[in-house]
Length: 293
Image 1 (cartoon, rainbow, N blue to C red):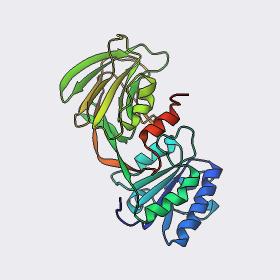
Image 2: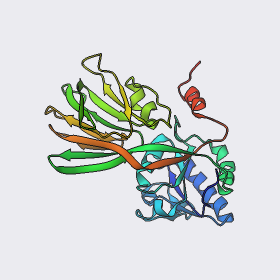
Image 3: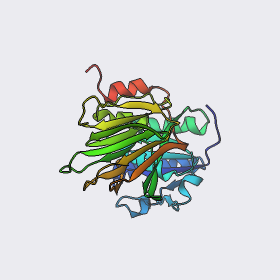
């Protein structure tokens, strides 16, 4: 699918990964020959291996996603998830090059990077638009924190804390009070992450759905629920319990107290992954989950 021309490329590199930064340097030379600007993500200069290695320009925090028509991620799924926060309200194309272990999101192998870029610069590519969620942490009538997630919103307890109770409402309709170690609200993208480990279903990425999955529920009949992604989901912590934490994509955490609420909605923006031309979602699942082996 041909879309707008690529004039500026951003790069996000797995922190302190010398091999990935060496690839970023090769990328800089390759793009320079094609008169395409390359900028590194704003905090790259703080890393041990960083843009100084090959004089890659570092973007200002407010400009990175706005200036980049395409963002290349050299890392694993964790680096990709942090990139989803960097893009903010913008919707650049994102090309994931796998320098991690699993690589559900960073689907391209390193040897595929330059051929893929040739196709993208020529306007020939397919985009997989992944749903994201916005979450607001509320106490009383005040919003304490808010953020956007690509994978999941999770409430869980510390290792030694008592079981917690979380009330779930969907579009102001009471669903259930879950007594469990915690609760996961996952996107289709996040369905193969913590949700899968907790016994939740795998949801095809293009489905307009969100899954609510209890973690080790006290009542075994409390099972995961798949709901429309158009609904507002509200979670309320019912009991006071030390060590209860709200986490966004497993990378940012906030302490919760009794009667705190988390309000979750579908984000207005999507995370736009460039798809590999020679693989599909089921190829990825068979490979990563080792089906049939």
